[in-house]
Image (tube, rainbow, N blue to C red; front, top):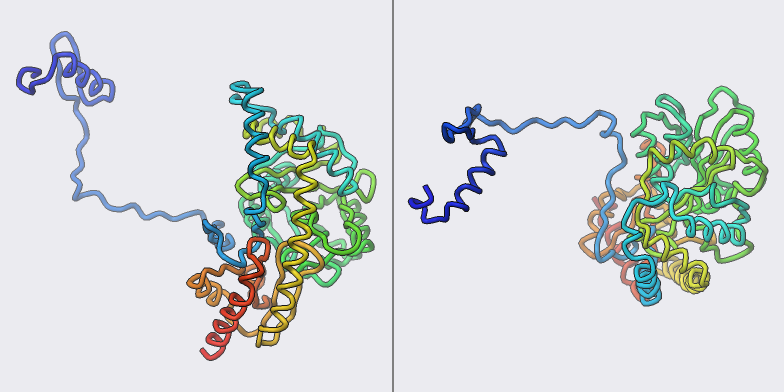
Length: 432
């Protein structure tokens, strides 16, 4: 065979050996023969009909993740202002000092140096007194929601979510077969009847410091009432504190976890909004008793990783770069929010109601009787990607239409043209 093919004997023997290993040939002292294999002609193969599990049909529609990011994308910070040179230097330093030691699995709860740095930061900025042992590093806030549902609930339990509210939380609850109910929000945040004991949930997902997407701040009285309600019914509050670092007036809003001793609250934070989304680092803070009880389960559910990035982030916080970056971004976003408010008042020709509070990275514009989903799709042709307000609702019958306008990633120089484009698209939609 080697002579006929013009190849060396070693090459042919190697090929035959590989075919034998893969089961196509049988080799013995008597020689080599073709293994009997079942055959099926290509013409007989039909494309398989794939049916995904029924519960996946209820997932919120996927969000486009554009690169580069389009204008008005909600939840996207001004990544071009991130001090990349400092980050590169810190990451190089970590890799130079630690080297290959960081290439193995780390602690399932995350790097200890980062958990200590986060604990110190939270004590100063959010009024949360906690130990590093109470903190778990996650791949963003959404993994924190997923971990909470696994630790604190079982299939069939009920969860409350804000209406309108964060679609990601609803996706997680669907995955573990938790039924969820929307609770309307007003200017004081999530509404609930503290005297109604018949519909008490196991989980309560809320963003009290800056409700998403409408921007309300939950009042102190309602926070305390919700804490008492959760205690009375053995419920757990999942506090999503996604962008509270960006508050532009008044004092910082205290976290619910820090408002009472042994509060039945799991606090979620993320660096996606304060630094950059691709970092994929968030964290959760548990009460001491839950942290102790969950330690073994966390070791089974999570695997430590991103060790170099976590250590670099710890240095970024401890050396003061994080605090300086936050201060600079507050000034930038405060100015952008005010400019966007002014341009909306000046240019938006359709009656609207504005939500957004005094912080965050977005403003929400409610405009009745428009097909916001269609308008958002059309806006992409003009490099705009606002969120459709209606997709944040569970109940399509009560959903309001409008737009969630992210200004974190959008320079004020683009506001005028972008709002005028939305104006035209809204007018076209209303004309049918």
